Length: 358
Image (cartoon, rainbow, N blue to C red; front, side):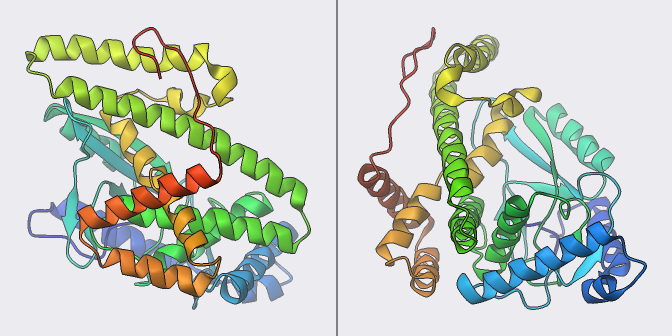
């Protein structure tokens, strides 16, 4: 649920992007209905009332227990057509795993570009493909305007299971708590950690230790799979760094990408069901959101431990990291992540592939 970059566009951005971004946000704002009025109304569907009441409970928990400040966020409701509100475009050059960045005033650079219309996102992705970029278009059920607007509850996520709904609320509120312009990986990993740790505390406050165990197992399987994919990303970059001509690079790239899926299927017992990743075309751009959301979660987990499990101390220490240079910030999070995984005795998945051994 990446924060939607739309609060400003540089002179280099197209008028069409500016128009759709502003128009989409204005449409959302105009469609908003106060949640408390919907809850009080006899005409509101009972199921929707219950979900809006659940959101209100989640907001109270976020404020009182997690040190987040909802303000007026998620106090209104908007019905959106379809299952997604925004479609993000991710891109990387044909022979690089480094993401394409789009830079904007106030919010800095980001490794994605958001569209309210799926057709616009696909059209832009097609343009980038013609410019020798790999692309991926992904639907987003929720986004944060980073405090510029009072984000509403959307029909795209209001019916999610209780724990998924709570986690999403915590994630999006975290973006408004701390946002470092120009560092997508920091921002998304920070919000993802707040989501995970906040959800654990939310479940334990309800005495639901069984779901804590289920979620922990799910996260561990996901983390193993992400680590596996990011090692393949590094292997691809190693290939691209070689002085091969373009035709040879394309052939070798295709072979490596095919091996990613073949190796996963021959070691599926290690990773569990991760079919979601292979439902779209596998290319360089597919690694971009994967890395942004997941690569440094362990670092923030280590920071939380170093902060004594105190949310105010954690937020203060995270803000301190945000003031460092990009290189120093990444190095510190990597160190914290390694130390946390060592303390937790995180088991590195061992798999054997035809192309290389992990």
